[in-house]
Length: 123
Image 1 (cartoon, helix red, strand yellow):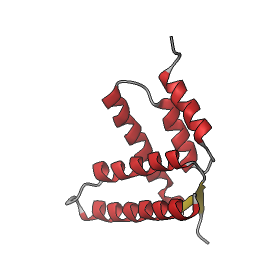
Image 2 (image 1 turned 60 degrees about the vertical axis):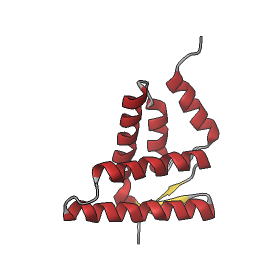
Image 3 (image 1 turned 180 degrees about the horizontal axis):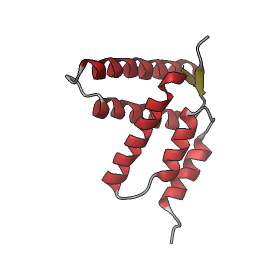
């Protein structure tokens, strides 16, 4: 029996997750790297394509639990790069994304709350 983790989130979070994972594949497993890296790259690309298809057809998706650690690394790297580029924290949005790939549902309200926490108090 396959162990799956379900992802239930709104479309904006789906887009963020897919972007983060695609960026991770490109950075961590570049084309023309070692054979092992190419196998990992291919497996992750297949998983991302599966998520994209399920999100489009069902509005939710699931993935093999064995990929969880790589998905988490991908999200962390994505936000690390975002923070380096923007010079501001994305900690709350990162934690929300990590929770979603861990199986916790989230919607637009949770994303907006995370973004407002990251923006800090307004003057």
